[in-house]
Length: 414
Image 1 (cartoon, rainbow, N blue to C red):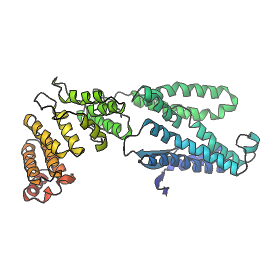
Image 2 (cartoon, rainbow, N blue to C red):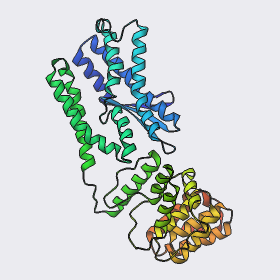
Image 3 (spheres, rainbow, N blue to C red):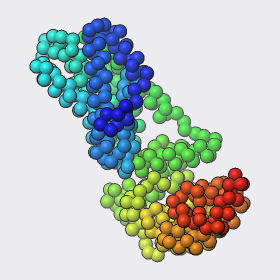
Image 4 (tube, rainbow, N blue to C red):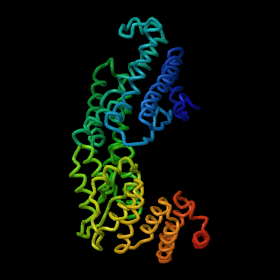
């Protein structure tokens, strides 16, 4: 099912929720209320989805028990204002549509005797403007909480959501107690209780130690956090002992207008000879338009690679040069790095730069170099085979007899 081009998944929980509304409120009010909730929930999520699409993101909608969800995948890093705008668009659409429906029906939305005169207007009043306003309460996971998280993020970058989750629990608990005390609000206390349970679950997940004895799992979690940072502008949850890449930190510094700081971050990491381990994942989700300004800050020529300089940092710079279309620069710097830190991964990167520049003969030679190193490590063989089969820059090389034979050998070794 699609509406306005957005895929909509209706899960069984949503239908159970609507039936529960009918059961608790009876007929005809329950029927009107269930229908209104269905319509305004879809309108609410479409508001989020349309706002997300205006930023270039792709969105889809899921309807489940008690709530709907509009998930979206950004095509670039979103600003705080854009993220807050997406959060605001849902309840704003719901409130405005509800008020418009009441006015078209000749119902005064601020006159209790008017909107409560019949079941359909009362249902629209509750499902439209009232639930929409409720969604703007600044507690998580409501839209108001997400908007507040963006505001907090201005002062505590990367910590807005975590801070709001912690603040939301006592605020909602206070609201719940207040509803129990005020007799007219007592019927609504169940909603506050459900919200409080959800917040406690969010707090539990946030506070849970994210340790792992498996370094591969920790590395994957760090890579996911790095990817989320580049996609959404907010880092994901990092495992203990891990950090975001210096490229992300430099990008954030450049965003605030501090070009000197951005340059120092990348160069200090690149030339660090302390021997401390690198616990960050490469910025593979960064787009060329985000990498270009950072690369432009670096000196020409680049610092000469030394054996005590970090290999990951050197390889990441070669990858960034390739990603940004600086193929000649990437191949040249990569060759210098290979003299001090030879590896299959680096040889593949150099071959990719040369192939994209049209130097197929030289690229094939570097693939041969990569294959020679890969014979010592099964993981390197897998990396090389994956690159040859999947990377678009090697499409032309696959037709060369020696590369075709290499692919066949690697496949047999799998």
